[in-house]
Image (tube, rainbow, N blue to C red):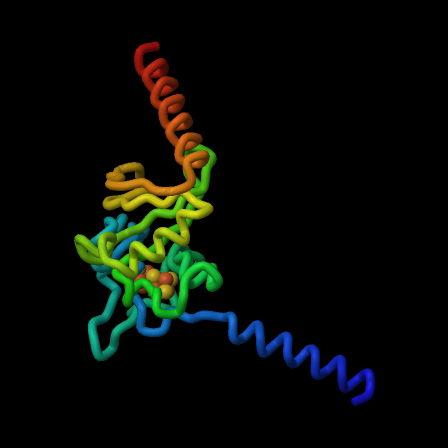
Length: 182
Ligand code: SF4
Ligand code: SF4
C-alpha cells in the first residue's frame, strides 16, 4: 500500500470509528415527557407529555421541522456522552433520563428524571448512577429545574463534590435571606 492509499485507509478508519461512536435517539422519546419545554403557548411542565408528541404507530414529534430551539439543541447524557452509558442504558429502556446541566451555583450536576416512580431504585439504574457518580454529583429530581420549582429527592457523588455543593447551597441561602431582609 503506497502512502496515499495508507492515508485514505486511515481516514476511512477514522470516519468508520466516528460513525460507530455516533448515537441516535431511535425509538426513544423520553425527554418529550421528562423535561420542561418552552412551547409557543407556554411552558410544558416536566413530567407532562408534550402536546406535539404523536402516539404509536406514528410515534414522534408532529412539529419536528419547526420544533422549539430547546428541543433542537438539547441532548441527554446517553446521547451526548456515548462513553458514559451503554447502548442498553438508553432512557426509554432504563426509565431515567440523565440531564447534565450547569446550575446557578456555578457547578454542573447530572439530574436524573424518572419516567415512572421507582425507576431510580432498579438495579440497572443504580448501576448507571454508581458509574456517573464516580466523578459527578447526580441528583434524583422531579419538577421543573428550568424554572426553579424542582424537588430534589436524593443526591450522590464523590464526597468532595457533595461538600462543595452543600457549601454553595448554604451560602446562596444566606445571601438570599440577607437580600430579603434588607
Ligand atoms: S432522552 Fe435522550 S435518547 Fe431519548 S429522545 Fe431524548 S435525547 Fe434522545
Ligand atoms: S416539540 Fe417535539 S421534540 Fe419538543 S418536546 Fe414536543 S414532541 Fe418533543
